[in-house]
Amino acid sequence: QKEVEQNSGPLSVPEGAIASLNCTYSDRGSQSFFWYRQYSGKSPELIMSIYSNGDKEDGRFTAQLNKASQYVSLLIRDSQPSDSATYLCAVEGITGGGNKLTFGTGTQLKVEL
Amino acid sequence: EAGVAQSPRYKIIEKRQSVAFWCNPISGHATLYWYQQILGQGPKLLIQFQNNGVVDDSQLPKDRFSAERLKGVDSTLKIQPAKLEDSAVYLCASSGGLFTDTQYFGPGTRLTVL
Image 1 (tube, rainbow over the protein chains, first blue to last red):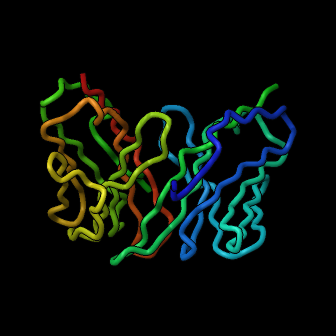
Image 2 (image 1 turned 45 degrees about the vertical axis):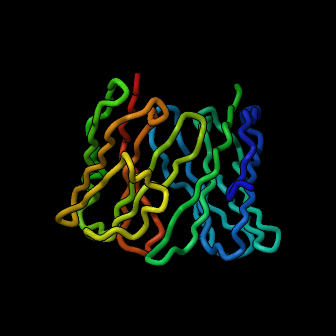
């Protein structure tokens, strides 16, 4: 069983629509959850972090966390072509000496004109 | 504030050769990470340093990979000998401390093993 699972996509949405990206994780003890955006050929860039159940909004982005269901999602409102990228879900687990991020394989998002 | 620096950006080698990558973290960041990202996959943590000590190297293939951070600042990751399956992007990241959550990534080194 993969520790962090995402649909690889591609997920195609028209410009202006809402893009919904999903992630499930296996470690019930995980406390911190992150969404990174990665453009082709570039390094990951943090766009959202969430630690508590519920929703967290930042501009056009909303992260949702449900620890009971071990489920994290990212909603992108008013999707723009510049949002076309791979979105990586990362889950933090505590090892003996510090935090450790486990990444999913990423979901490729394509926003079409 | 300068970001995480890595070099080289690209490297092509033959299998069984050795290669080394360098990383300089954001100034003042105590925690440094090396990740391997194979095409189509998410980054996989290879090794995590806190200052010059290793916190986690459970996924580092120690028969061929080694890493050091001697003075608690910059770090070197070495592969010797390289295999075809080592072709990947090697990402360095840093964060302010062990339990500071935001990791900042460098541009990566793309390694091709022929």
